Structure formats: C-alpha cells, structure tokens
Length: 232
Image 1 (cartoon, rainbow, N blue to C red):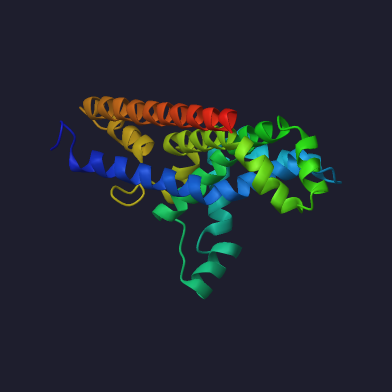
Image 2 (cartoon, helix red, strand yellow):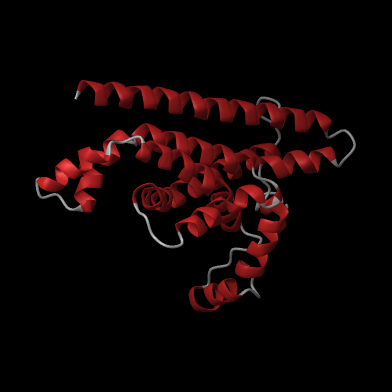
C-alpha cells in the first residue's frame, strides 16, 4: 500500500485517468467542428443537431448506457460489425468506458467551445477572407487562436465529466476490478461492503484532488494564452 491506498484503489485511479484523457482527446476535434457548425452555419435541421448534441445531458445516464450496449454491444449492429471486421470489442472493456465518458462529456465541450466561437467577431474572419484565405485558413489563423481558452475550458469540463461518469459507464461496461472499474464505480463498490466506507472516503478525496488540479491547470493555461493573445 502507498499513502494508505491499496492496489485496487490505485488501479481505479489509473483507469479513470486513462479513460478520461482518451475520451477528452478523442472527442475534442469533433467537438470543435460541431461547435463551429452550430456557431457559424445556418441550415435546416440545426435545431435537431443541437438537440441531439445535448441529449446526453437530459437523458438518464443509465438510459444512455443501455443504448450504447444495444448499439455497440457484441450483438449490436455497430458492435457486431466492429468485432467481426476489425476485432474491436467495446462492451465490458475500458475502451467502452472511454466511449461512454466521451458521449456524456461531449455536450459540455461543445457548449463551451461554441460560446467561445460566438464571441469572436465574424468581421475578423471576413477580413481574412478578403485577403484570400479560405474557410479552413480563416479558422486556423484567426478563430482558433482566439478560442483556445474556450477549448481549454471545454476540455476540462469534458475531463471532469469523464472522471465522474458512473451511470452510463457501469451499464455499458459493468464494474470489473482492474478492467472497467473507475473511481466512481470503485466508490460505489466499497460502499456496498461492510467496512468499505474508509476506502470510499479516500477515493472521494482523491477524486477531489484530481478535479481541483485539472481546474487549476486549466486556469493557468488559459491565463497564459490570454496574455499571449493580448500581447500579440
């Protein structure tokens, strides 16, 4: 035991960090793209896209997990295809936990990044367009540097949501120690056995430290970026 934590507790922390980091990094490019579409484009079905993006926030997490199981389980249409063609299994694997965490945190990431994009004056992008820059170049050279604080904020929100996700994860990948048991599911498991309150309390404190550390790092990076933008 290190610092009073057992092997199972450290394993739950390591898995939670891996799941959260993978979920955040994997969904970030798509979140930026969807946020830009919702902020800058007008098209038929925009309200439906926005509703679909935010659906995981209003659905019970268990429902989301069950839908993931139906879709990406071994008997699901997508899950069966992935297993047969690529040998990829998501259900009851840590990769499935990352998928569930990414879906649950995606709306928060999109919301933060969309607000950052909407705060950028479109005239700046139009000015770049008059100089010959296409839409991608306008976004890369003008919009992206200005929305970095929003991207950082969205990433922290997505990471925090992934770290705390329980309902969708335990429904989709269960609670297998060393394989799919994240911090929230480990806390739940300890609370189900007599005398497990102490271990659960330690994990709660550990979760608070990780979440607080992520927020502090995000604030430091956002301030540095803001100073760099202001000085450029």
